[in-house]
Length: 625
Image (cartoon, rainbow, N blue to C red; front, side, top):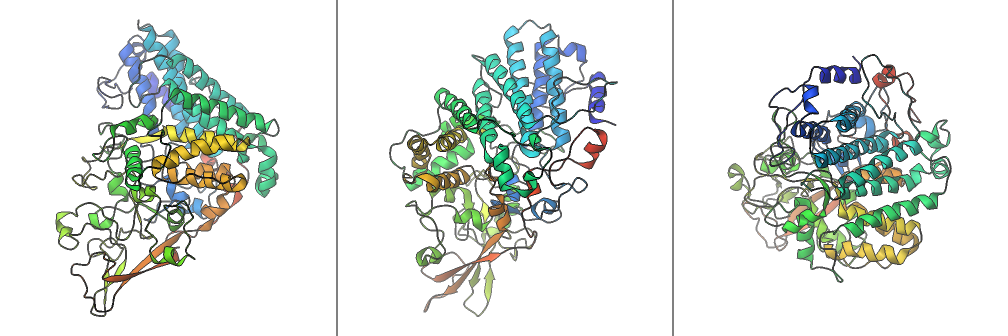
């Protein structure tokens, strides 16, 4: 049955989630079935309906498989998850690769339909609270715009639907041009800004500033290389021969004006909001820089985080464990530690950092890390950008107390992803390797683990699902700063760009950037990569800059760490990381154990599935498929 028709029948039957809004809009459980007519007569029920539109945001970036794992940030440890069709260039309309539900074609159109139902009925609603009606309409406008920009980022132009279809209507509709989709989204956001102006704010719900920020992102993407037709054609043979390029790019127009629009929209956000600790005139200490970054990732939740970290969030997945989407599996980062933490803590090592990301963290003095530098090669985890220590778990890194059954084997609470001389002619396999005596099936293949988004509180075990409640940053203030820097660079305003870029670096404990021209652009791009790592930006940024052949296309590199006893030293039992006892050797290796990555230009956009094409004969497939 057609998905739109199925959902319409669902609505006619009058079934919907009735959601409590006393504490948090996503603290939800189905309580009753309410008729459609009754919904729009009652303010609380109308609010509950709009809350259900939020539910299509799903896990944010906290799904077991991360978007980072199909970029040069991470690899997914476990096989059989349907990632390979994309990363190896084999995806097709009949062989779709994994994608998060927050980008999936059918799910996003279900979300858009729910928003359209709200937008059709709210003007006719009869409850008395006019302020609530305006706020809910503004939220529904934003959510429709948000879901459309998710589709636009993955597929290019899509069918624009601004009403809920009825049972006997023709569901066939053509894709709109990229230009028309951008205009549609911006119109929704401009209306949301008006409707949400001076409305009360609730954590996790849309605000005026949320809508302004999403407008910044949409305009930044629209100005980028991938969506400028002449540039896209010059850089890609697939796009140069596309007969329907207008679905994914502007065929013509004033590109400078697009950058100016992006800059203006972003500056409006910067002027209206305040970022977290962006007022420093000199770099923070390394320890403060690390803690600042942890504070932002925690949203003010952990003991190590300043509560002011929440100021950074312009739109976030809220701090609640109560909303469940399937099988009583809580949201809010509860399972992020289990999904991604070390196997020596009984976690699953899901989306492990790859060497290319590790190498892109600068040295503490702002110079590039370089394997050809003897000092760097001898001790690659020393004196790095403080954000490295807040984001990556590496061999020898201090971490939490081990579970009771492991503590006797590894009482030092250090990550062990290497192989160590036992002093008897043998090797000790690190507790967190795939050869671990704890669990030998779910360890990292890159010999790193992610730390970002895992609460560092030693009293909270990663593998206890009730312990960690971490917000997901859909949009944060620092993204806006980076957007502004990029627009300024494209407009030749380098002094302004550096001034704002250095605000981020000073907060992080890093020195100022002083370069100019192409070197400055490259430093900006790396800064964006590091600051927004694991936040679902790299996938989109690499594409809109048209550099994925040099990102995803680089393949996967891992580190091999070995330790040999120094002359006259005795092996430590149990083993612990100690540079006075052991000499450590670090060797970079190619890893093709799960994937052999390559880039194909058709991968700039995802294919529309064969089933969707069969349902709607007016759909046009993306270039290259």
